[in-house]
Length: 482
Image 1 (cartoon, rainbow, N blue to C red):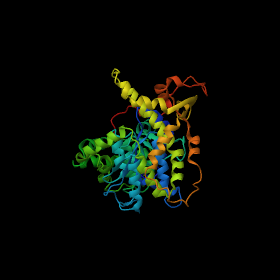
Image 2: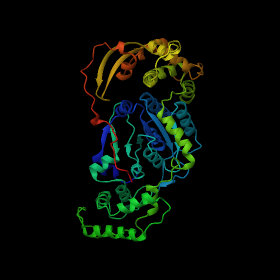
Image 3: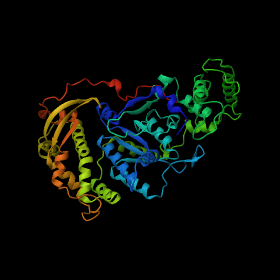
Image 4: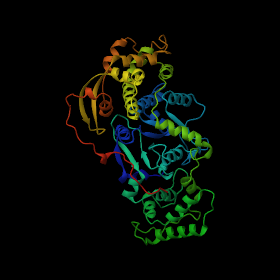
């Protein structure tokens, strides 16, 4: 979706990173989880196309949510608003109707995981881009290239299908450095080539020719002025005509030598450019940008900046009903998928809590410091250490105390129905055997070093290597984007 072949044009700027690598980098350098804006409609469409069966789409999203939680990522799921166009490129677009059982279940799942949601004014990708421009999120996850036209700076193109899988990531600064194209150039390409909102474009102009014309920069000063003046100020028709004439002359004569050849037969539409589209790209209407939404936006930012634990009891009951899982089968799945995530997030919280304490210790602290007692009981031993190349961090293998797992199961059991769905799955595996499968786990070394330094006198599994910041998704300093 978006501009035809735009991904190919900007491909020289592509860098490959795994979700795990980005998440680890955020904790190391920003001391918080990675914040991602997710275009819900596209995400659900991708999930639906990869699964078959009853409730399979929602179940697929559940396992994606588990992965986000385990990596400590703080997502905001952005839903299309009521003002989104019904058609793109003359076709009905994929969206999620408001009054459907799937949408209601998805919203419940988001709430039980304590993730954030946001409802766009119109296009979800415009809202995602604005969230990123305002610094509320670090990254946008979408496959729609229009997100760059709306002003997104950092984009992950698709959801990785397996752990540690590198996926295409883009930053507008990388795009400008590698291709010479900034945001205003991409907007001009959309006007010339056609986009989701103007399917015609200009006959005889493909994406490559449009990109070559963009390098001439005849449009930049005009679009910069539109950026400064906003939606309501009328355009200077004389300047618009100058831009039209310059583009036409360049097509016919190739004065700047930016084109690979002359295009004497190409004629721009007399109404080119459609500045209603330009305005919508440069100044998209969004809920996050409205004054009336300031308090909601503040709450969203606060929620994204703080780690949140799922509502375990409600989440377990929801999954049993939605997926028709017997109670023992649910405990088995939650143990294998979510208990490791639960423990690593417990470590992160304890380490962050310890780091935040800067005051002198008082005598009564020794009588009421429950966190210290938790730290003493959480880990039995650290068995080995190694350097994990996939995330470029040091990790160690720990053995959890069984009381942690018992406590985790108690959070789940309160509202489970032990008589429901018994015919659906094999329910015979004893509960006691489950802990043996999850009691050992690789975890980042830093929180262990902070909380349990006395446990680290163990043999290293692999020669340690220095951490390099040259291959992580670091957003460099940049000029003010258009």
